[in-house]
Image (cartoon, rainbow, N blue to C red; front, side, top):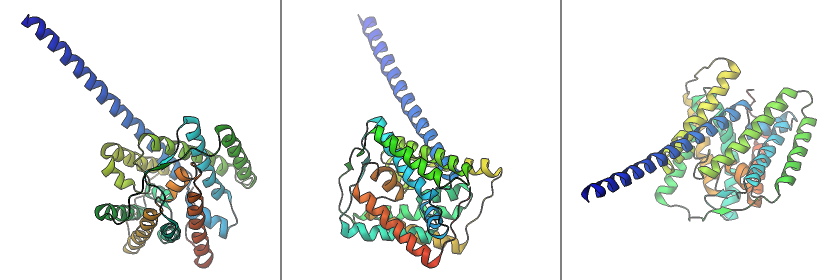
Amino acid sequence: MFLKLDQVAIKESLVNTSAAVAAGTEIWAGTALLGVIAFVLGFALNHASICTVIATKELISEKKPARFIALVECAVWAALAYAMLGIAPMMQEGWLPLSYFVPAAILFGLGTYVNGTCVFGSVGHIGNGETEFGFALLSIFAVFYIESRFGLLPDQPPISGSPPLGAVLLALALLAILALRLGVSLQSRSDFWRLTLSMGAIGITSTILAVFAPEFSITASVGSIVSIPVAGAVILVCMFSGSLASARVRKHRFTLKWPTIKGTARRTLGGILMGLGALLIPGGNDTVLLIGLPMGAWQAALAYALFVATLAALIAKFGSMARSWS
């Protein structure tokens, strides 16, 4: 009798242990997959030199619209990925009223101009060894952390919405955008294919990360470690590793550039302004492009338009040192 009970207990223990091991293996396998996806995202961000500041400068100062068209293309890639997966894009916090929203978009544009690059570009610059751009991301996190600590803004419920177009129409729109960009890139076919592959990689990988790690964002990437400790840390490390790998492959060497006092002060100020803008929209250019626009939100279109208009006005008036590195 006791022997049978012991055997039953042993079998139940083995089953429970096996289930726990299987669950743990599944969690680590999923986390590793997120790491691979984040690596591809970081690699693509660096490989394409994709940045709204660079794109706007090329459009305003050099009359080259290709990189700006590529940013729109990136949003369409993300929308197509959502449509193919049958999942609606979701923001963790809904849009704030226009009284916050409009000045916030302008403030974010001012912050990116001061910083010299947007959120996408910051990841790329860090991959190039320009460590001072890390202070911009740390400053953005500091702004988000202070707000969460003291609850300065009203909580906004999450918001989601399906892409306004189906997969077929989005695919046709993507082909039209590719044809348009090819038409303005005839003198540089290599740039065309590099941007095409990179925009597709950014749009698709960001969508997958948004689905499986919805609390992660590039804008508040450091803060994501707090909200999703293991996955957030893995994604962050792998994303920057991908950017570093891209720079190493492209230049066949890696040079670490130590921050200067002037550069650190500029990136910190730019990061604070970007953080305040992203806090009040809410979301940086990554959220607006890769979540807001795919869900067809007019707020995302308005935020991006105001953001770019601010950048364009500042670049036209004062110029910009931003330039593509690949």
